[in-house]
Length: 600
Image (cartoon, rainbow, N blue to C red; front, top):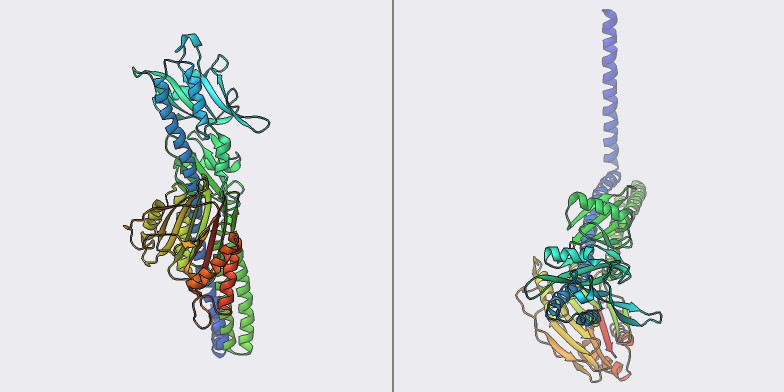
């Protein structure tokens, strides 16, 4: 019993000793912190910076995620509209041709002329045929399939060849493009296949039935669409380098793109989910994160457009930046702690301010690069038009915008100025640019484009910000200009006569969703130059708050017109005059200039 009591006493003593030691260490730590307020501030600052960095990283990740999804959606929508418009043209053409064939059934040989004209008048169609039911024309035999196809000769000339394609070796009556339209009594796009006898290329065929006056199906009118064209369409406008796009049918047969592990993984996901319009984050077999988007083409097809891109391509720079910031922040805090411990608390505060400023500047530089990347190339020059534009933001990010591109032989261009400055204006500028690209991709009426952008800009516009915009569409073959002005400064015509383009008084976009915009038109002569600008030009100020003004602007532009300067020379001349006027004064507003010279 005595021995047991002794051991128990020793155990209690050891526990009390450990507790006393822990209390002494905690007390010593508290005393150190009390005596060294600078060290305490450093520890608190380190914790705060870690939390802030985590929150900022989360916010930046979310912003980049949203930006990525919006950019991919815009790209896929642009491709969708190009494909859908082309398919619609083919579908409408063949539906009309079915009526023409129905009226000409009495003359078998006229079918060759009909297929020839169908191919000749529709550049999108590689080959066209009228496939008759067996023995419809007894004198023509069991198979009668007049076919016209576009051929390219060795010297580069394009010709149209007409042949009677149907035969025992080419029994079209068993082909999908013949059987399905008859069975379903409606138009149908076939699965992709190699047309070795006719087009001699990989094609997909749209067929629609032909009925005689009794309503009986007697033939199918078909049009071949080259898969090479689809390959070119889906390869356009890639914001991210790792982007891979594919176009597949409802049966998961490849129409455009290159087959490989990425496509097979996407098809497996599509089969699993069954959702043809969705977005997924996945890991491939190598463990690499990827983003996969699905969008149906619709119409008479069951096609699906697929986009796959690497996660590292989207967030790689963010992760590198965050790692560098973590390392720099850690080193800075250690160094700052040493200095504060040896000197004073003021130096520690100064380090914190500098670190925060460096982080903000870095983010603004990234934002500036993202914003500038949304603008078109600075110079566009061909035999029909010469375009040059420049944007100089007053801050790291700005609210001015301009854009231009050529589609279907027409130059689409716009210039705009968002109310306010800084990040909110930059976000609205990015949205407006994206909306212009999206709507102008399938509509060539500036008033309708302006109306659509206005309705989108007014939706949930809690900040009540607005944008002055001028949109123009120039037919490069005729010089016919269609335009619509939304509260922006009227463009200047430099040649052959100096004048302002007549513009109706419309409100800027983003104010009233019910606002109606009217279309205006003008015809440009050969050699005409148009100059567009934002108010950052006329309202540029020197140190005495004197404005550059319209009089100086017009004087400079008249001199440019007299010297017959090119668009690039005009922009450079005007910019130099503004810089010479303001001298060392701080830039007060974004400066955007755009010059277009039409010469055919």
